[in-house]
Length: 213
Length: 150
Image (cartoon, rainbow over the protein chains, first blue to last red):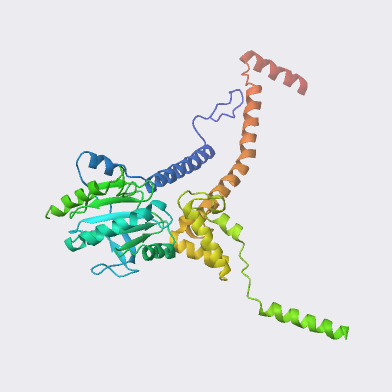
């Protein structure tokens, strides 16, 4: 018997009709898509805070991997324009320095890094610059101006900053022969005055060099 | 004499114009508005961050060298990646960023009359509650209808 029968009150359909289900499905999809975009955005801008915490506890975390084009090379490394992967340096202690030509403290730090390179390269140490968010010509000009001979890779987009927890430039890291971070310096290397930190930085490097794989 | 002088002047002006170096036709302000500072993420034209200052100088240098706006932008994208663009390009996967808001607005415009009609229908139904007649009332109604028919 249908609800249209005379003498019978009309009955209400229970639950959702097809149109309501369609609208709900579309709304659900839109909300899910927005949520997915937010999650992807958060993942892509993930900043690694574990490096400093691990170092403070006396632990070493694996240095985040990267592959970047070489801006200035040195014998034994890929030529200029080719890609260098961090794992290619495993077995060598590495001083990783994140810098840019427009960064004023980087100008004070450059001679210190060059002196570390001059002093330790014979012991198998690599000083590796990572030039971030910089014009290629400016970066090359900076190298030339300060007579820098250590190798540098280019990271115009600054993709390395998130994984290394970088909040600005310059920052330096000591990576041991196993590819683990032994020290992280958030700020410039300084040789003078009470803020001088080169000695403590180099002492960690000496420790890393003394370790044999 | 005057005619000859005027003709010589016109000829000199034409020659001078032809010999002048091509002036770059780059709208620098517009280009800076389309790009953003890689360190502070604000449009290049309103940023005074050191990296932005260098990029602005680069733009002026290349514009003076005769580069087009597109060439300068392409060169910067090669050096800094697409993140340097203030707005995503209207092509490829990035097109979705432009299409989704437009589609949502269109869907909203379509939904407004539909939802409004549904609300009106619901309020009318609520204003006139259904009354179920009693058996006596049904019989009386039928009786009166029959009388009217007679």
